[in-house]
Image (cartoon, rainbow, N blue to C red; front, side, top):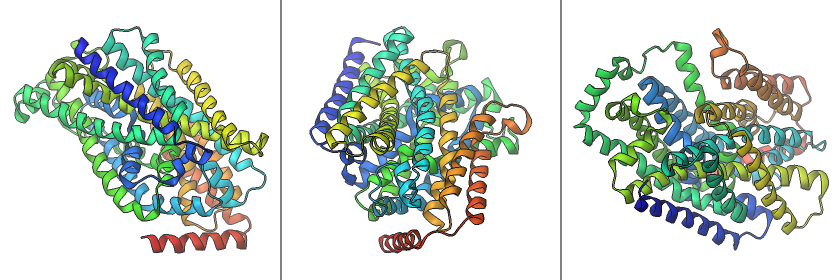
Length: 489
């Protein structure tokens, strides 16, 4: 990296820290720290949800997968697009209304406890444990992505790069909470969007146009042009099953909960889906054109294809901005994950089980300390430079989708879902992901989110049907939420 590129990169980091400081001045209570006081506009909510969703996987993992295997990896993007659209369509508005009606719930475990009137607190605690378990893996994937960026860009050792990247992210999340995370995600979402448009277009021009690019890829391996190359029906279904993960991702659901009102959902959905489709195509074509421009001998790690194209094709100032987009992708997800994990510790463990009379200031500081502790654990898990960003993301994504996805959908749309049904569904979904991930061969090669999602939903429905009907209080609240949702559409 040249001096000019490094300066541009550093200016970006300073700007993100400045946003954290500004948000610190507006964060006075736990609701501000966890949900930003429920005052996100549709644009910020949409880009924040998209940026926190995609992470370094969008600029490193997906281009790397296409670079290494070809266009048969597009099935992941297709599944994600359908899943995200359905999440905005069916979940966003209902969840925004229900979480406010159900005792102004601030976190997913908080909502589940209030939704089912669970006085045992078991549902809250189990949900929080699942969040902490899988977010530790998810956060470590971001740490690996950030370390790869600093390692390749600044010629640093992997360990040094890991600590430098983590220090920046921890700093502004520690200070500003949800507002800092959402505002930085908004800026980072725009930067990621522009980068994923620019890199493939410039690379295609450098190769000699689209026809020349396709010819180069075909000369390397004709199978790279075929979306069905070496794919079975089970393989396609497995890749598309990534889309099921959206319904259970706490950091994405938090953006729905933080919207100003359910009436903002249609506009946010339009912005968010437009951003996502263009960004996914950009990531896919970055990997594809990388095959035409690079030989495998020049790239030891396929997940660094975006970094290398940026470094060799652009002016140092532009290169610095585009490399900052990778850090933006990493930061936008890690900060959200740290915040949700911190919220689980603060709201769902500390406040509910130990200090119900804790002051708002005390809770905010417990949240900040939790951010630092969780980050240190994630850094320790990311200390192996051989860890794959895509592998870590896929495991955590499956964990949330399989454990929470069916429960979130059913809790918002089915009055009959019971507390025991939700609790056992979450446990079965989480255990299925953990156990399935350890098995291999035949049917077990299917992405674990698919069996986990099915078993979680089936368990929740069967247990609910075998148990008692919901109390009049729960039925009345459910009817009220449905009425409010119908008015907001």
